[in-house]
Image 1 (tube, rainbow, N blue to C red):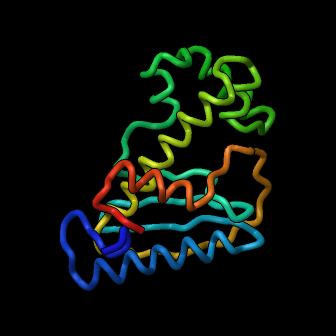
Image 2 (image 1 turned 60 degrees about the vertical axis):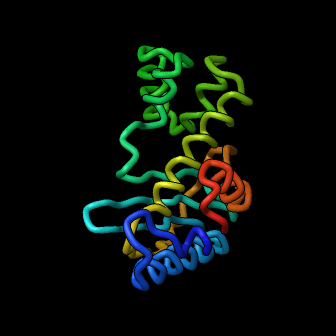
Amino acid sequence: MTVFDRSSSNDSSQSRQGHRQLLMALLEGLGSDSGGEVIVRSGRESGRIHVTGGKVAWVSVSTVCETFSENLTKRGLVSVSDLRAVFDDCRKTGSNFAELIVGWGLVSADVMREEFFRHTVKCLLETFRLSDVQSIFAPIKRSYRGSLLFTIEELLDAIVVADPAFSP
């Protein structure tokens, strides 16, 4: 059984087919020259996997309520006031959020990568746990100014560690 064959709510043929569709959309996105988003839907839940340059830039899913910035403040890594200042600067300059935090010396590059990786794995795992998913890759040509990117292999390896029942 693979991560794409398993569903947290059932093992129906429809769920397995949906997870295969998710994998195919993700592989299409990772192979795309333009990059873009894999858009995932399961009933009222949804998620997005942003890809660029053959790597995953970030993942969001509606079943993970805590945002990355909330996680940083909860863990005591960045204050709320510093986050507000970073957000303001990002809006004005178009700078990458995580890299600006590192650039300002609020968090080291190693800690930022570790925290962002952990959050990305959590969101990707939750995306794979959705049942009866529908997925599509939407190519979007845009510049991505960040270097915090992850290979699908390193993410899937971490998912297996987080949940050994999954074996891609």
